[in-house]
Amino acid sequence: MKKDPLWGVLAFVVIAVTVICCLVQYVVEVRKLELASRNPVVLRDLNELGKRLDTSIKNRVPPQVEVAGTATFEQPETMTPSSLPTQLERCVSAQKLAELRKVTRQKDKLEARFRTTVLGIEDSVSYVFGTRTRNWPHTSAAIGYEMITLGNWESARRHLWAAVDVYETYDPTQCKIALGQLAWLEDDPEKAARLLQLSCQGEFHLPYPHNSENLAASQLENAYTLCKETDSTALAEHYLERLRKDYPIQAKEYEGSGRIPLSGNP
Image (tube, rainbow, N blue to C red; front, side, top):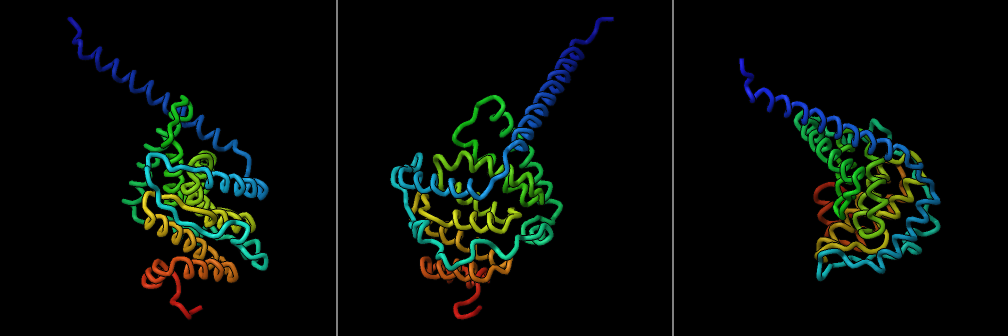
């Protein structure tokens, strides 16, 4: 009896799919090993990062934008008065972090897992085969943000730091957004405070001034919220004062939504 050629085609497809799946699994595992091998960040690393960010801010021209709006803050040396504490009172516990950031609806979890799977494959293939483009750190950062919603703090840290390593050289704005989120994941109160400081320093560059101002205000609000959650009163008051002084319009909006206390209230 003559064999149906469709069986041969089907067998070839099955073999090809199996090989592709094995290859994808391999590159994903290679990427995981690379992320896990990264040396832990120490305070000196953050201080050096701050210096590099300042240099990048002065020389940066936003890619693919002809006229970029800029929101300007105080420079790092005057940003935090010496009388302020150099560390948070404590870090956010994993339980509290899960209450604040982790998604609870099963549908949201499934969607987040699907996105991280797709993004993880893209990130791993780009890394292993050297096809990284300017969008590559965005992929790594997106995985980090999704991992926060899934409660996978360690994976979130690894991917966000991988994004920071690239962002610092050409996109300080995105770098500081990632640093603001890393402060929530940090288990060292001194490093967490330094991460907040870096996340709010210098200039932010987005295509329009209004967007830059909104982002600058949201970074200060993020710093205030973390300090408030960790009972770091002096630092919380510092960031809240800066927010109200430099961005009064956004501060009023935050007051209306309950994200910050009303003026005159503690």
